[in-house]
Length: 361
Image (cartoon, rainbow, N blue to C red; front, side, top):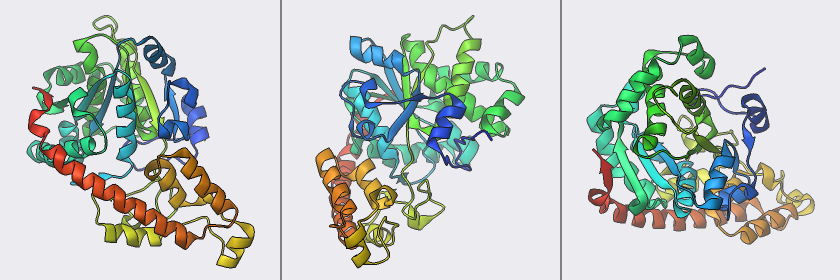
C-alpha cells in the first residue's frame, strides 16, 4: 500500500523509510552540505528533493534562495516550527537570499481567518516569534500573499495547468479552497525567481512535500512562458507527541508544547510524558533504559541540547541505568525554563523590530 502525505494534517507519516521509497525522496546525510547544523547532524533532517543543486551552490558560493511560510491561523505556534527556523538560519548563514511569506490568503481559504486578523496575528506574534527563534531579520524579505500581485497572478495561471484528477492523486481530495491554496503556494515558492532566476530550497516538514511535488510538476508545464529552475526541498521529521504519538498535535493538548507556554503547564506535561524507562527503578538500574523510545530524549535531540557530547552522555547514562526517568524529567524541565526565558526576552526585542522589516508591497 502506497503511503499518504497530507499537508493539512489529517494523516500522519508512520514510516519515514516508506515515505522515502514511495515518493522517490533523496536520503539526506550530514555530508550533503558543508558544516551541517545540529538537526542535520542528528538525523532529524532525513530527506529532500534535488539537493545536489543546492549543495553545488553552497560549495561554489553561487546565488540561491531559501523560502518558507507562516500560516497565521492561531495565536501560538507549534514547538516543532523551531526546526524550520533552524534550517532557514543555516541557509541564511551560507548566503541564501531568504524569504518568509505570510499565507493570509491560505488562512482565509482553508481556516476561515479574515485577512485582517491573519495580518494582525502575523505582525504581533508569528513574525516576531520566528525572529526570536533565530531568523535573521536583516537578511529576510517578508510579504503577505494578499499583497503580492505576482504570486496571485501566477496562482491563477498555474491553476490552468493542473487537472482535477492529478490534484486528487497528490492530495487525496480536491475541494476548491485547497486547490486555490496549493496553486498559490506554487506561486510563493517560485516568486523569488521572478525577481532573479536562481535555484531555491524549501526547508519544511515532510508533510509539505505534496506542495513541492505540485510545484515541480507545474514548472515542467510552464516552460514556454517561464524558465524556472526546479525547486529543491529539505525535510525534517516531526517532533513526536509527549504521549509517544508520531507528531505533536494541538488536538491532544497534553501531548503538545506550544510557543509561548507557561512553565507550570510545561512541567505538568513533561512529568506525564512517555519515557523509555522500565517498570521499576530497580529494573531501570539493572537493565538500563531505552532512550530511543523516550520522548524526553527526543526533545533533547531535536530542540533542547545543542552540544552533541552532552547529548551522548545522557544517552549513555540512560542505557547503563545510571539515569532514572524522574531525574531525566527534572533535567528537561530546567532546560525548558532556560529556553522559555530566552524566548520571551527575544520575542519582546523582536516585536520592536517589526516596523523596520523589509516587506514587499
